[in-house]
Each structure stands twice: as structure tokens, then as C-alpha cells.
Amino acid sequence: MATELDKIDLKILRTLQEDASRSAAEIAEAVGLSQSPCWRRIQRLKDEGYISKIVAVLDRDKLDLRAQFFVQVKVVQNDQPNLNDFSQAIRAFPEVMECHVILGGFDFLLRVVTHDLHEYEKFYFEKLSRVPGVREVHSFAAVSEIKTTTALPI
View (cartoon, rainbow, N blue to C red):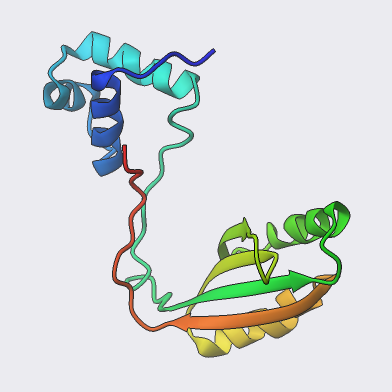
């Protein structure tokens, strides 16, 4: 069962969001605790699911993944089986960084990253448009990125 978070827990989480590679001693110093209690709190936050995973955030530009698209997808029929089928199929595509079920004129919103427009075209025709039940797709190319963060506003 998850416990309520106090101010120190929130400080730990904010510190980890900034740089999760820091040692428990460095985090403890940043939040005003000694190392052992800080380490125990971090372990509890992991065990209770507040920290779902620790990853490296990579630079798209350095990896030459310069094309980013936001894609609205509408399925043939907006019922649970069709939504589930699409959801399952889309998980297999590494180009899809995010997939959200949305309310409104479309059923899904995707964030897709590729090297360039030609690679997106290949993804669209060879993968996305072949997913059973896809009725309509609208793609929007992002020309610049104003803000990107992985840090939640806690």
C-alpha cells in the first residue's frame, strides 16, 4: 500500500527527476538527510511505484533522429475491441514514442520520431496504414521544439 508523500519524499523525487545518476549520498545532501534514511526512502518510493523506472534521456539530434510527428488516428469503429487491437499493434513500432487515447474527433494521438521525412513516409505506408481498423490518419510535422521535459510538476 502506498504511503502519503511528505516534503522530503517530494524533494527526493524532484532531485531524481533532475539527475537520477546521483548517488544516494548526493541526493541525501541535496534534500537534507543522512545517506541511510535517504536510501531507504528511495527504495520505498521504488517499491510503492512512485519511481517506475530509471532511464537515460537521449539527445534525438545527436542520434540524427531529427523528424518528429504528431499523428491523429481514427479507427473504423470506436469500440473496445478495435481500440485494443490498435493499441496492441502500435506497441510493436519503435518509432512511436507515445500513444494516447484521446477524446474528440480522433481516437489516438501518437508522437512518432524518425530520421527524416522519407523514413516517416516509409513508416506510414509500411506500418501505420497497414494496422487493421485504421480509418483516418492526420500527420503533423513538428518544425521546432520549444519545451520538452520528463519532469512531472510535483
